[in-house]
Amino acid sequence: MAIFEYGEKEINYLKSKDKRLAAVIERIGHLDRETDPDLFYALSSSIAAQQVSGKAAETVWRRVTEKTAITPESIAALDAVELQSCGLSMRKVQYIKEAAEKILAGELDLDATAKMSDEEVITELVKLHGIGRWTAEMLLIFSLGRPDVLSFGDFAIKKGLKLLYGHKEITKELFEKYRRRYSPYCSVASFYLWAMAGGE
Image (cartoon, rainbow, N blue to C red; front, side, top):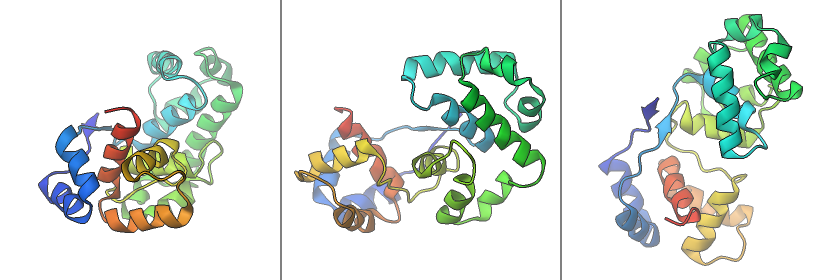
C-alpha cells in the first residue's frame, strides 16, 4: 500500500479557490489516504466488495488473498468453485476471472492506463462486467493516484457538498460548478468532502 501524494501546492490552491473548503481543510488537517498501485488487485478487490458491508468485504477478501496470489495468472488458473468458497458470489467470481482472462489474452492492457487520460481509463474499465463508472473513478484515485477526480455518482461527495454549501440537492449543473472550481485537484477536495460526510 502507498499513500496518495499531495501537499502544500494542492492545499493552497484549493484554499485560494474556496473559503468554506479552506476552513474545513484548516480544521481537519492533512488526510492520509491509502492507495494500491496494483490495478488488477485493486480492481478485483473492488468487485469483491460490491454490495456488502465493509467488515464482510474485508473477511471475504482476506480469504481470497490467503487462497491465491491476486494476479491475472493465478486467478485465471484457480477453479471458480474454489474462489466462490471464499464467500464470493459466483457472479463476482465470473467478473474477476473474466478480467484476468482479458488481460492474459491481451484484450485489456492495464499498464497502458498510465498513458491514458482519466476518461480513456474509465472507457476501458467499464467494458469489464462488474465495473461501472463510479468504481472506475475510485480506481483512478485509489490505484492510479489521479489528482483530478470528483465523482457525481458518489453519494458521500454529494452529501459533503450539501453540508459545505447548504444545498438541498446537488444537480449536475451545480456539481460541475464545484468540479471546475476544485480542478485540477478534485481528488484532494474529494478527501475533505468524504471526511465531512463521515462526520469529521
